[in-house]
Image 1 (cartoon, helix red, strand yellow):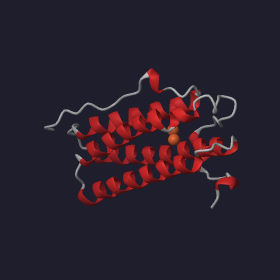
Image 2: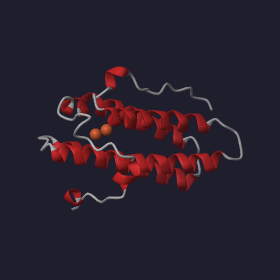
Image 3: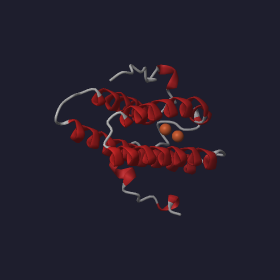
Image 4: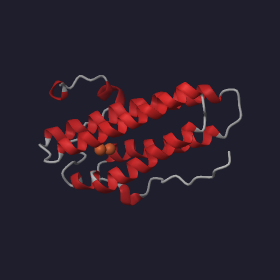
Length: 159
Ligand SMILES: [Fe+2]
Ligand SMILES: [Fe+2]
């Protein structure tokens, strides 16, 4: 595919000491690696695999961000607004790249998307998420499967 890119990957120093958040973050990195791999796979299922990966990414963005924002709200986190603003800006960027992929059908757009996900998440954890390390714990973060988060039943987060 002409460009062999190195994606940032999960490393132990990215842990925020909350198991479910670490698991979600690891899933984003795996998804980014998968999206990069699938662009070089020349098989007839490529389009299907890409769409599936996009759907999973969208679910992780919605569900994981809700999980984190709900927990941060519950502890009266002082930097909540900035944290949510970063999530929202990232979600908008991802939506734009996905739209571009769907408009052009260009599989290499997925390389852009995989870098966006892995690089944004690395920076976000190193700056923003490290600020809540120690404040969020296994005891105060909802660790149910993402589908419960994405159901949007958390009234306190409703606009
Ligand atoms: Fe996160
Ligand atoms: Fe976050």
